[in-house]
Image (cartoon, rainbow, N blue to C red; front, side, top):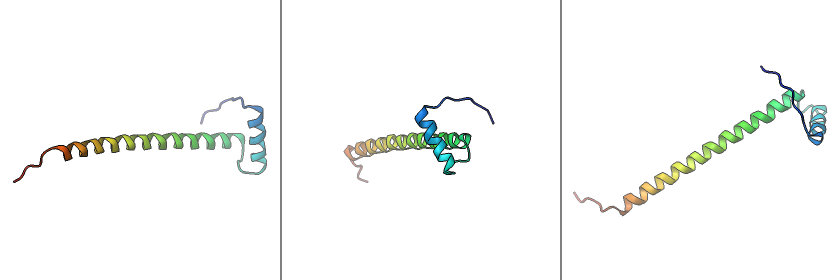
Length: 74
């Protein structure tokens, strides 16, 4: 595990301190780790959704081309 020194906006620091007092987080480190994990998951989920949308567009284009081509009658 790595140690960092960070700077927070005053408003964010006050909010985070209150959340720790409410025992939502065990410490500042816990809160920041939690927030970064959530951000990472959200970013990865968005990327996966975008890739899925791109794949769906490709499939749609392929299907449209296949419909336009004459059918072979056997």
